[in-house]
Amino acid sequence: MSIIRIGQSGPLKGEVEVSGSKNAVLPLLAATLLTEEACEITDVPDLKDVDVMCRLLRSFGAVVEEDKGGKSIKVRAKTLTSNEAPCGLVKKMRASVLAMGPLLARTGRAKVSLPGGCAIGKRPIDLHLKGFRALGADIVSMEDEENYGYVEAVTSELKGVEIYLDTRSVGATENIIMAAALSRGVTLIENAAQEPEIVDLANFLNKMGAKIKGAGTDVVKIEGVERLHGANHTVIPDRIEAATFLLAAAVTKGDITVTNMLSDHVKPVIAKLRECGVTVEDGANETRVYASGDRMLTATDIKTLPYPGFPTDVQPQFMAFLATASGSGVIRETVFENRFGHVPELNKMNAGVTLAREGREAIVPGGRILRGAKVRATDLRAGAALILAGLAAEAETEISDVYHIDRGYSNIIEKFSSLGADIKRLPHTAK
Ligand code: EPZ
Image (cartoon, rainbow, N blue to C red; front, side):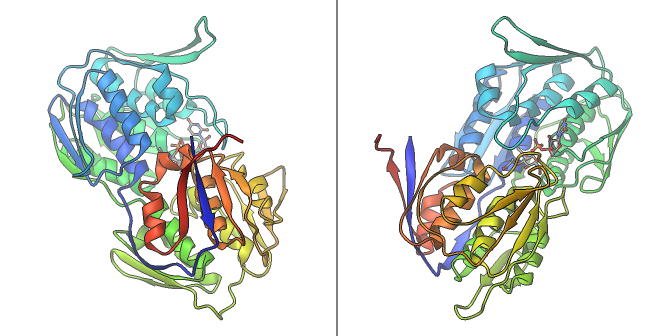
């Protein structure tokens, strides 16, 4: 288990290229199960979660060829030999549940161990199952002897239907779209999530011959088809990684040009950075962010919401920046019920954050001189926040449990080093 050691760095300067989106490539790979023909996904990020998804596809009988250098993955799910997701893989990556929709549509059955909660919340899959039931599947969830919970969906035929999502769930929207793509008739998903990753999935499915309209709005219409054919697709850039680098410029008062990013996908983050006095020049697929040394950066409040609101996946990183800006900022987390695991870790670095409203709100006093400390990444984005805090902090910061970070950020050390950061990955010396 390695650690990441960071020395006070900055101002960070230079150019950094964003990789393909983790939260787009995972559903895209799951969608390749919907056809027996070959598909190729390009601009794939080099992430642990992608490796797990490839292992999952192979466990169903798909042939998967990863070309890490070429950042491409070829998948051919010609014959499926299993429609059960191995428990070990689901435990590693909850996005394994995205295989349910395709397996159900392709084989009439899907069995997945319940992903269970994680550091940021209970994260149930009731809306995924509500969608499958509405489409005509029988759902059985059970505990087996070892007390592992799993859920099984079985159907002889999926029929189009109107489904209302009580919460704008990204995964449920994606899973239901994939199941409905091969159903008989028309499906309407109402109160659908609108994230760009859902639009990317719908674009890929439509290239495969699906008939999907309205992705990116709160009503998605899917006209089921008999079969889908193979297609090639390039993953959209990772908007969360892009936002993380925009914040790296702010927190170190640097000057960074982030390339291969779609500024349209991070509008709320750009708006909030501007409110704090950071200069943002956003172009079509690159954005320059700078905060000249003498200019005082001031705090603002943020409230996380489903897209197009402020993304919950950027909340921890923004908190790290607010800790260094002057004045107090309030962060309200409305998407997950427990997404402040990074607060105690940032407080070890003198951030002075307090929680309110039954832990749904964080008050960041700001104006703090962060101090280096030994901290732990509690989840993927919390880890990213600790890197940003470490860049600004006096003395060295050591982050453990960095496997969380490796799940969602490719070549993170190289990317930050290229901007002038004092950052290295070390083997974890047991103390
Ligand atoms: C996706 O997770 C992302 N992951 C998450 O990114 C992201 O934080 C989240 O969407 C919200 O934007 C991937 O795309 C792989 P949800 P997902 O279903 O689909 C509740 C990261 O750091 N809910 O939109 O699991 C749920 O508990 C990760 O990259 C139900 O109640 O999120 C949560 O409170 C973290 N029932 C809210 O909806 C359900 O059946 C939003 O969850 C499903 C969800």
